Length: 135
Image (cartoon, rainbow, N blue to C red; front, side, top):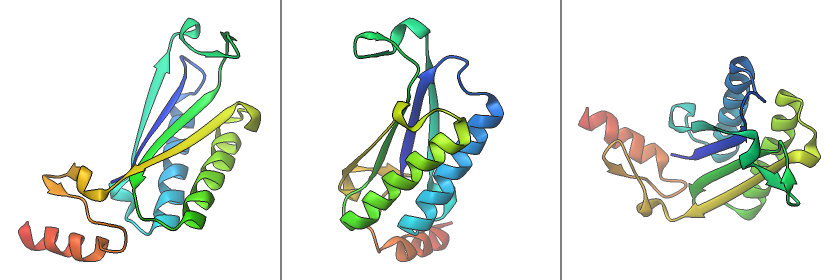
């Protein structure tokens, strides 16, 4: 359901670090938003060093852009951002001042996964049950 895109400069993160970060993002999202980890998608996008700038100069930040379904309580979304930011810095060793997390959302019915329109927050159990019945 959610999609997190982690953007860095090439070679900043090792394969092991990417796997650890993906696992942490999945764990945090699953815990806070109450969805199975199997629905959390984490994608890594690496750019050439001359393609990432901060304050007009080449930089090596970690940018994490997440998409989630609208309707989660505001406090839950704030917790999600804070915990992912802390985990990203801890797992990667990139200082917190170079980590940017942005969570965007739209209604669940604006997305389809596995050929089915996504459920609204709180309706996941029925959605998962219907999927098992269809299999």
